[in-house]
Length: 252
Image 1 (cartoon, helix red, strand yellow):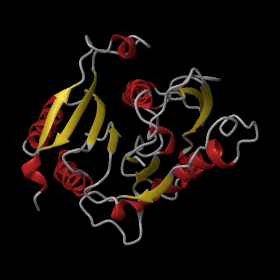
Image 2 (cartoon, rainbow, N blue to C red; image 1 turned 60 degrees about the horizontal axis):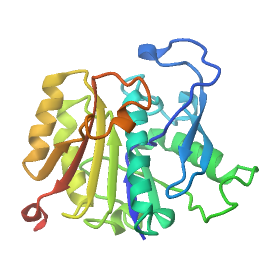
Image 3 (cartoon, rainbow, N blue to C red; image 1 turned 180 degrees about the vertical axis):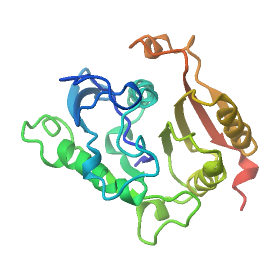
Image 4 (cartoon, rainbow, N blue to C red; image 1 turned 120 degrees about the horizontal axis):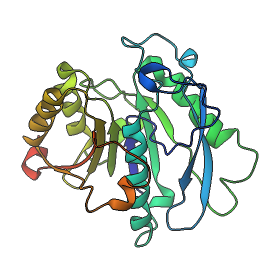
């Protein structure tokens, strides 16, 4: 069974009832609908992204943290759906994958709400007619701190199949903590995918340099993935990277 740890809920979104520009040009709506492709099939499932800050249990340090869906997440979602389709053609692991969504403690109620809306409260039968769907687990993850005993993250230590995160490169002081957590989750066979929109090129370059000390890091090429980058009018400032832990870095 494949195991996936997501630092954010990654989605492919279609704008519905746009109420105008809000924070940094993002729509103010508390909910959006979006469509995901079911790996290995021609099916599409309509889901809902709940991004209501009032559901969070506390106030983040910055108003944009923890509740807003950003373009880098949408691009990464398109790319991951393509990769999932490729995997489903050769293995049955994808449909039985276990997924953990993580964030800081104050944002967990919003993650739980998204899981409930899309996996527990659905009454259209869409998610269960032809396949077994396993709802994601929601867990707290504070970068640089030990995983709590009894959690999926603790049991997946150095054995997670896929780790995904997007738009988290906003504070240079947190880079080493993020990389430390990646080391706790990853083995040399773990695929790490992340995306970001360039806001501070020097900060982002510093993170890539620090990550490359212990991970093999490569940018996902726009030229080699035209179906992903051309699926929407994504700006040139959006980037996707793939990383794998170097074998000698997993010896501790």
